[in-house]
Image (cartoon, rainbow, N blue to C red):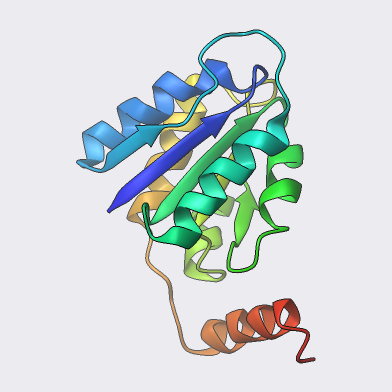
Length: 148
């Protein structure tokens, strides 16, 4: 598995913790920026990461901004992306088990680096439950394709 990480200035405080968690799990990653606390626009980084997932260059993504909300909204505009905004470990687990999410979004102004590390570990060690949840994910895909 390979993961792309993207953040804006509001999420940069979590990036190192996320990379450390991935390293501890033995997961390869690529850092798509930003690299300073200078103000940037989060949709640009969401687009980078989502396009990498869609192209198959990476399997999943992590997006970080001030709250995680803007990144999640931006990411979910891309067909095939299921981005979950996460603020606790249970939601990180359910994002995978029930929604088969492929992008994790968190906020540097509401999440500590220690929490982010735990959320990343939970997200990347959980497994999709399938069964009735697959039926629901299929309906999400149908919504993307305007089939409902």
